[in-house]
Image (cartoon, rainbow, N blue to C red; front, side, top):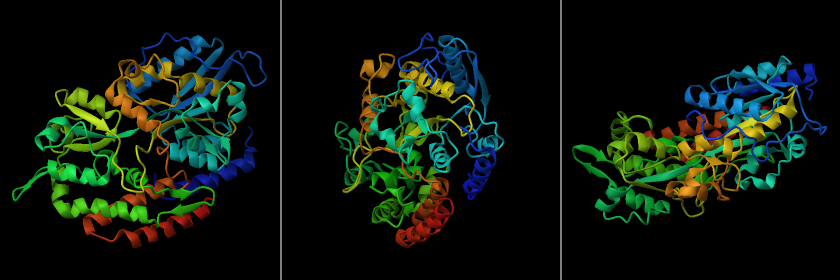
Length: 455
């Protein structure tokens, strides 16, 4: 998203509200299409719905699209009389390219949208572009107490529910067992604190006058590149929604960037940059964890499947991300897919019925059983093989997802701008050896002005 886009979004939304009145993975094969618990079946008036066609926007192609089409067919089979007018709207269901806002302002929005851009979705809720879901969810028999508490902050704005999470990814520390043993480290006792992580990283690194052969850890590699993850682990909050206050001028954030800079200065940032220039992505055989170039990395639960495909012989384990004193233990920032009902949707009851059906563990099972993602529901499902098999990776995934320290940071209309600012700031620290404190102070002032405009 380009800077300033959400300001344009807000302007269009305001216009729409004034003029329209604003009424208001792999292909799935794991289930038989029967209606799981909580799928609903009545309209808000209590009568059986019939002959309802609702519009659904989804953001993914490839195998994920095949799976979603299977899910739609399963819903229609389980709910006779319903039809789905589905539209592929990349890259994120129309949130960041203006298509959804344009549809709302044109009085012709879809009835339900799913997107991985949860922060942008939350910004739409804050700007009045989404329908509240509480009454609709209650009529469908949904109970919030069935959901992991870690998702409550994302679901609600000003006490009302606007977003319904489908599933989520979590981030973990992956480490190479063989390298641990060779370095004299105990793979049964992975690092829990930042100090222990740093010590293990030094023991695992192989650096000589000829250059870098292997690094034990690179903080800004993989999920560590996310603008919010490490700050969240260090205890930062980024934003106070009650007062619409940006919270970047924070000692915890300054401490985090200074910690990152210790790696840059120890191994020379340009040498690290040169060392990492040939690295491949997570779904290539050249990822540094696969090739032995790094011994530890922070990545999502889905990385376990990449390891199965590209490096099946590597013995690895996972652990919660190490944290500093005063930070968040057993924590992650979530990568959550969310459903929403745009303002002015013509069939909100059908939309809620679909999202409750589509988000059940039994319907998500094929995806979860491939990627080890997490359902939002507390109760384990027999359809999830990782639970039945007591998969050690998934046990840590569940542990981290259920932690009260895990969450969704920067739920603000300027989340994208903040992400961009923090990445630029980080690079200025690690490549130019800058003091993060004045940079954070300036970034807070800059973003506060943007947040005040969009209040």
